[in-house]
Image 1: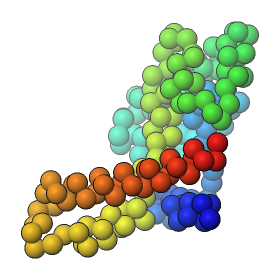
Image 2 (image 1 turned 135 degrees about the horizontal axis):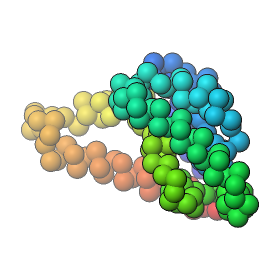
Image 3 (image 1 turned 180 degrees about the vertical axis):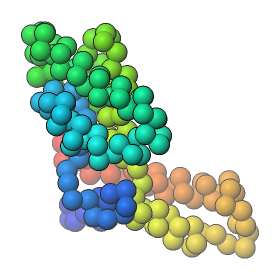
Length: 174
């Protein structure tokens, strides 16, 4: 029964054009990136997002992402201890922990920020439409402003209930 209730929280993954996502999440962890040659990284990870990245960051910063991927590969090739650290990372390793295990030099700030953006989950159309449905049902003659504190409280209360329910499902499974 809990599993069935949890399925109601599942939302379809969408791409930037709001079409059904047809591919798995891109590699964002160092242990995934070191398995890609830079040409494959560019072709499979960076190029599909290049135009958006250029508009947001500019050509120079996008070029730095490529350079930093090369630097990551060189860094790992030259260090057996670093390879052992990266090999210990699993699917349970948190994003920041994985990246913090890398040496500070050479700086990989642009590559890390790019991968962090890829790893960030944004609200999809389904959840936004749901919020507007809730807004319509909660907005009354007494709640005329979208910025009303009481309306924000309604959303936060509903969010808290959902988070508590999700945490209950997670802790009971473990």
